[in-house]
Length: 349
Image (cartoon, rainbow, N blue to C red; front, top):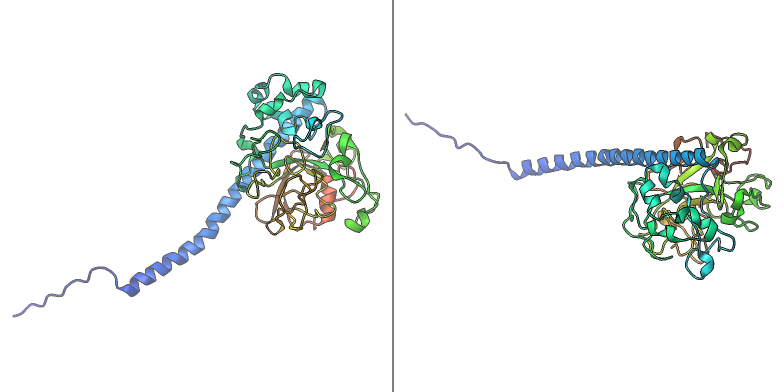
């Protein structure tokens, strides 16, 4: 009697191996978008938390002084639109972030320069700039990149950041956006109807401007704190050039730590892809990737920009944080930023 022994097969055939690989590839293809969505959701939450802490810092400053911090302090005679050290008139002062440092758990950093921050408006002391290279996690959005490349002008070494205060203003042929709201002025323009679609008499006062921060009680009596933007996102421009001034936490100029006139002229709505949109000195034009800029211009205008899918994060003057979609209309974008336009935001737009 014979016994037949069958050899047990070991391993996979080539076809089986290819099928397994294909299945794994399909699973990875299905999982990757989900993982990316989870990461983006987490980044958006962290960005919102950052803005919440910064808005609380602004409110604490308000409680101590009676008004919100100014976008930047500037003594008389200082050039309002040129930050580069071309001449002695460029001795600009501390910005809103520097001023609220004690209110965002950074009092040691604030005190590291002695009395320089408080002395600037008295005697022009610019030793406050010694803190400009300090990197603060609270000031960076995890969705953005380029934070390790400092701005290399005005003394160099300026650390990057992603948040700007709302100086509002109007940038149109008869109004210079950045300076139009200085000292709390509320500009109007003869071009508003044709450029934006709102009446020409529509004002656009800001809440944190050159040498000005509003009293929240006064704001409640006009457009209201829950209807007016306090802070908006800004994208770091270092991927275009180390000299691109967009996204610098201690530099109180448009695009660096200020958004202004971002609903007028060639700025229209969040993350616009308009050619030459931002007017920020030394910035490069990259409209297809949402970083349009008119390089020859000095600091005049800057849009709210971020890397979150479909929109940007903003903090309102009441401390709430919202996600505003890129599809919001230019008119609504104006209404959200102007403190005194008397316009109602159309939530459907």
